[in-house]
Length: 314
Image (cartoon, rainbow, N blue to C red; front, side):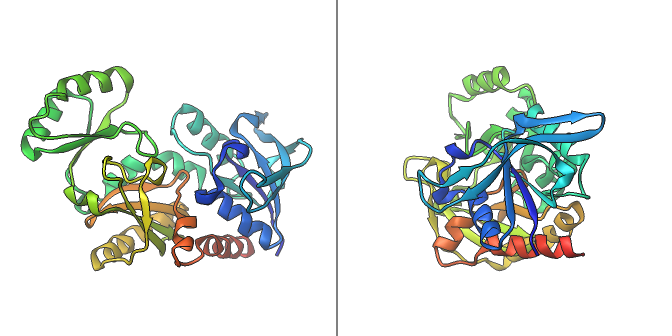
């Protein structure tokens, strides 16, 4: 089977291929003989209900600094593709939301991974709240009285933007931290929407586990251990990837989430688990699959294409 595949992503010249999951998926698609095309979200257009993009033929190579070759751009209707990979990174803002509305026009005739309507309806830090018993105590608000009451109940807390990415603007506040008022003012001035307030989990020092699910099934995991001088375990913030296995509790979490992910057409998902507590369900542009393979784990990119090809045959 040869598929005509387009990838909607951030500028390919800027990615760091050593840890980039999108690049791993593209390498596997090319290895299987699929035809690749590339465009950035700003090249999308809708005319009288039809969706177009200025796309370029793409070839990829696993060589840093020489990792891609692009052909001549051509205006193409997106229904010409068998598969579109929705792989631009957050922030999950109105620009991102708009692309999901446009891609919804062509899905499922053209299979969009992940389903654009469900990506729009399942932001990472909101979708997860459908499983409150799997989560640490979590509050979504911008109301000062609510935060003060939550802090009084739980002591150490973490505050982070509702639509943030990559560990940006994640703060720990200890029970008597005098920076609370200033941090509240900063968040209130910076973010118009609610933000996330969560009980601090001290076990984050031992790692924040990224678990990948493919079509609702466990595919691989990596434990991301934060640097000694940082709260955040994200690898883009200096977290160190370590090989890991799943605990029974983590397998329970995967089993609980699987049916919901399949129902929503969320084929490639990364969940974050700290000390047995689910903190996020990442559906926009999950990462971690190159680290998993580099540490001796499975080839998640191959699993993703096995599922995509099976869906296109159906």
